[in-house]
Image (cartoon, rainbow, N blue to C red; front, side):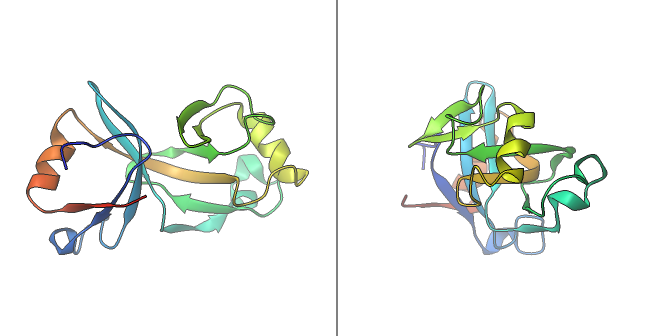
Length: 145
């Protein structure tokens, strides 16, 4: 799997049993000369947006456990560039980041549905070449999108 790229999914194998990554599916959102960034797509965080102090004015909205890196911040993936400015196109109409005030507004006004916005606590990150080594070792397999 030398063709890692943004927009593809990878799934952990038995090699990662007992780790944070056990039974995880990750969407790669960046893969370049700086390394690789992704978000775990199948691991709920266990809290809702309105349970976080700074967002206690918000509607209940599920949070996902995006990964073990930078768990002090919220990250967003969305399909609504018409409502959320400043996002970076990942692939197939999916954007990462953008104006967080607009994200919260879209959630609170039902301007965007849960299948159009995902919020993550943390992310996954690998240095240049690190994920490729893990793939070669058999820790990850590619999923057909």
